[in-house]
Amino acid sequence: MHGGNRQSTEHSRSHSLMSQNKRRRSLRDSATRVRSFVAVCSVAACAALYLAIRESHHFSWWSTIGFGLLAFSAAQFPFSLTEGGLYDVSFVITIAALIASGPGEAAVATVFATLSIRETFHRPAIRNVFNASQLMLTAALGGLVYVWMGGHVGARLIGEPEQLLRHAFVPLLAATITNFFVNTSLVSEAIAISEKRNFVSVWRRGYSDLIGNYTAFALLGLLIGVLKIVVGWGSILFVLMPLLVARRAFQAAFTMQGAYDETVKGLVAAIEAKDPYTRGHAQRVSQLAEMSARAYGLSEERCRAIRYSALMHDIGKLGVWNKVLKKPGKLTPEEFEHMKDHPVLGVEIVSEIDLLQEAIDGVRHHHERMDGHGYPDGLVGDQIPLFARLIMVCDAFDSMTSTRVYRVAKTIEEAFAELRRCAGTQFDKASLDALEKAVARNGWQPVGREEPEHEPMELKGPTEMDKEPGDGSQAATV
View 1 (cartoon, one colour):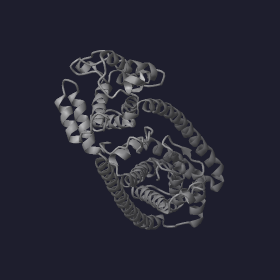
View 2 (cartoon, rainbow, N blue to C red):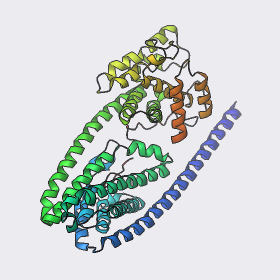
View 3 (cartoon, rainbow, N blue to C red):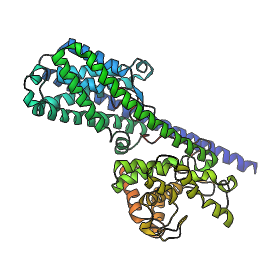
View 4 (cartoon, rainbow, N blue to C red):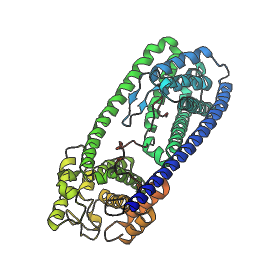
């Protein structure tokens, strides 16, 4: 017997060493790819800057320094995002510099925004290089698009007020769209490479809904640029007020959202503390449900709503007896009836939170079945709300691909085969198709058999993926 135990221990140590070596190789590979990506960004930024300066015709270092100091000042007063990243309004200064002076000045001035007093000297050098490179590249390309689309700069712009639509608004819209996609795509790719995640998934979760912010800031930048042309640097007093108002408004919105998210995360942490064998399950189901909702074609608002609904789908287990939750064997009929109460208990809890009714329905009905044999209401087919149909498929998929004390995890292929076998009776086929499409498009790394039970998965907020935006300037840096 002792020999058997020794062999088992040696095998475990060997497996642990192999896993550690695999993780080290994976980290080295990721680091190499990140460095290569940053190098490419740096070269591209230098090339774009050269073209932008050529298009400026009369490049002014005084103007560049002036706007650079404004961008630097804006970067010192960021506000926190729900994921711990920071956001500032220095993009407004980038646009103002473009309008008043030209693309070259705007590109160089933007780099000043990466010099945050609180962060620059505490970040790895490669992150500072990437932030400077990608912001310079973004500003330079946006400026070039503005000029190539017929945008006028400086006194020439205000000399033809009847041509503002043609020579200001249309080119500015094109430049803003360019800024948005270049900036968010570069940061999303950096995150995807370093964290081995799907680019599309990172971008959609972190940045797809920021285009409205960019557009609003671009219009404010246009106003400030025109003030600079007409009034000169004395317009700095006019610059500070709209910037502070914009910052305060966004800070208030994100603070309210952050408080909401913390409430939700606190509830989920409570249930995962009570039922440690499902630790991380709610977060994974939430991510799968949001991915599936997008694949299903739901709006962004409904995708966000199902994210919260799925995150709290088992919140009613807070009212379930501990002996039932932690029982390793089969439940007695009485215990099972008690367990079946958790969707209704969950609705009582989430009703106190400002959720869409559709999200509340997802919590109540995620244990229904298409054949009517589910609970709590025995709904049949399309009577089951769509959110619940999507969540029940994602719930089952994550459960099957996660190891439990009573069984080992299935592979993704095995899990989908089992789900397809039950489609039409237990699961909605259209929802299953959406989940398969989402996993194929975004990729998925199940917990599988290697999840250490003593290392709980970190509970992350709804903009996860994603670090989105990281901790620098403008909408997105890392």
